[in-house]
Length: 460
Image (tube, rainbow, N blue to C red):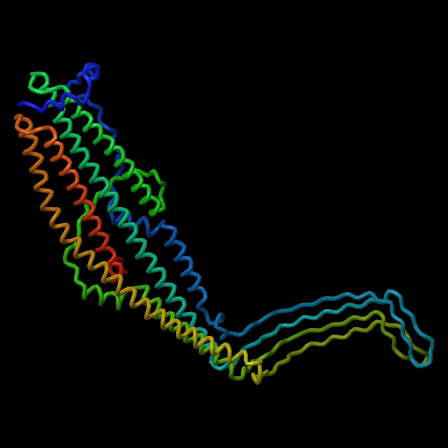
C-alpha cells in the first residue's frame, strides 16, 4: 500500500530518528478509578432517607408542627399557677394619735407572706379555641406534605446523581474500548513498519491519537470521581467513600400523559400543600372574626395572706402601747369575668380585611401552583417523548458504529484502509457511545421528573 508523500513531511527526519520504537503492547495504561463495594439505587435512596440533611431538617420541622397540636396550645384547657410572695420591711415610723405627742419608732420591722393557687379557664371566646385547634392540625398536615415533597425531590436528586455516576462510568468503558482499538492500531502499524510497508510517521500518529484518548480518559475519570463525590454528599457520607453502581441506566418507555396529569391532581405534595394553605388562611380569618364575640373566663383560687407587724400601736386607757400584730387571711375565691369588645380603633376591622386578602392570596397561590405543575408536566412529557425517539435512533446508530469500527479495523489490518479513515471510524463510535449515554440519561431524568410530579416516585 502506498501513502501520500505529504504524510512523511509531518515531522523532520531528525525528529523521527529520535523517537525510539516501542514494542507492541507496552504503552502505559491510565490508572483506573478505585472500585468499591456495589451500591444499588435502592440502597442509595435508603441511605439518603436516613442521612440527607435536607430530609432530616424537614422532619424536625414536622415534629415541631406535631408537638404544637395540643388542646392547651389552642386555649381549650385551664391555666393553673402557684404564686408566693415574701417581703420584709424595716422602717422608721412616726405616729401621732390625736393631740398627743408623736411616737417615734426607729427600725420597726414587719414581714408579709402571700401565697395562692389560681385557676383561669376560658369558657367562651367566640369558638376561637376550636378554630385554633383545627388550624394547628392543618398546619401539621401542611408540614407533612412539605416533608413529603422534600423527600420526593431528594429522591429525584439522588436518583439523577446515581444515574450520572452510571453514565460517567459508561463513558469510561467507551474510552477504554477506544484505547484498546488505539493499541491495536499501534501494534498493526508497528508491524507494517517492521516489514517496510508503512512509514514510521504512521506509528507516531497512532501514538499521538492514543495519547489524546488517554488524556480524555483521565479527564473522564476526574468527572466520574466528581459525580461520586456529589452522590456521597447527597447520601450524607464521606465524599471519598468508594462504591460501584450496580444498577444500569434503563428507561421506562410506557408512561402516559393522562396518568401523569391525574397523578398530579391526586398525589402531588406541593399541590396538596397549597390546598392546605387555603384552609389555614380561612382559619386565620375565622379567628379574627371570633374576637368580635364576648369572652367569658372562669377564675378561682385559694390563698393565704399573713402579715406580721412589729411596730403596731394600740390605744389603751393608759395611752398608746407599742406591740406586735399578726393577721392571717386564708380562703377560696371564685368568679366569672366577661369582656365585650366595643371599640378598638378599627383595628379588628383592619385585621379582618387583611385576613380576607391573605385568604384570596392563598387561593391565587393554589391556582398558580396547579398551573405551574401542569406546565412542568407538559414540558417534561414532551422532553420524555423526544428523548425516547432520540434514544431509539441512537441505539440503532451505535450498532452501525460498532460494526463500522470492526470492519475498519479489519480492513486496516489487511492494508485496505488509511489510518485517517480508521481514526474517523473510531471517533464516530466514541461519539455515538457518548450521545447514547447522554440521551439515555436525559430520558431517565425526564422520567424521574414525571414520576415525582405525579407522586409516584416515593411509595408510602
